[in-house]
Length: 443
Image (cartoon, rainbow, N blue to C red; front, side, top):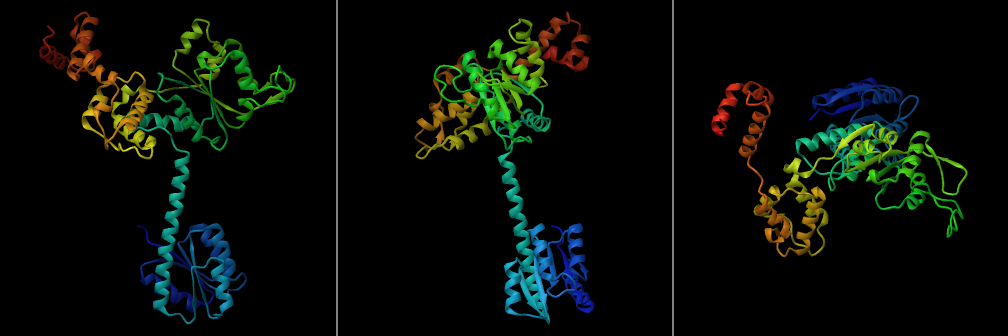
């Protein structure tokens, strides 16, 4: 812990030197100045945990110093010292935020006690500010749970992308949390205080999508008794997330491309162009490039969206996150009266072997099911869906040795039995390859 720094503001030289001597003997870092103006400059320059100031100073007085210090440095404590101890001046100083009030001539024991108390309160104030910063950051923190190496790198990439304010394309299987990734980018960006609007392109017809995205004017179609803003207009300044972007109809792809290029659009039935400032994040579980090659997705829109690509990994590629995800979902979804708070080791073993075709979303559903059906405190195997347990018997995962043997066999076949080339492909020396060939009887 660093040594507290104290600033003494006292215009009487002898009193100033005595305070420095006494406080330095207590082990504090002490600096002294003779006026409020010097004191304010010193506080701005170096910062102090505690300021001890005389009330009566040449020029600006101690109350002025107190007000300025507390306004700019709320955690800095101020002790007022004066030879003119009156009730009104004491009340005024305390009302304006002084920690305490000491009269001259100074009682050194009282001084030491008040200094210790003030520094203790300062440390507490600083801790409160630190926790508030952590809480504030938590509200803007990455919303996905995982501590594996791959996920840690993914979070780092998201934080970098958040500051770039460019369009992002997120690719990944169903259930991998692509929308949560998009929310993470938004929450960590400069647009975090603005709207995050999500739209699933696979749930609307072209006509409905037109109205949802761009809004409409009054009487633009039958039943339109008043005008309405669309998602793009509502999200101005924020982020729009297009889920299942591959399902966007071709005519809507043209309109979205114009928005990305021109940053303006027309409402349905409107004639006045509306300008918007939005960031677009799109997601797909398809190979968009393949759809472009087939003519099913516009190439120009693909390149507009694909400024940066982010890959959402399937759960099977970061299995080490399964235990922490289970704990997170148990805490997130537990309702009053639900008793399951932990997971049985046998259950965890089964889930660690399960391939999770539905990824994290499937795991979340499994945990919610266990919470709803569980009578005890543990998530036991009988609370698992039947197909999860059945999969264990039908399709057991291979061991590491089985995978290694199969891979070496495949590489040897691909290299035509050339062991030098096979060793190079595998990234091992020929002696190590020879030992593995012998171990697995591959000759």
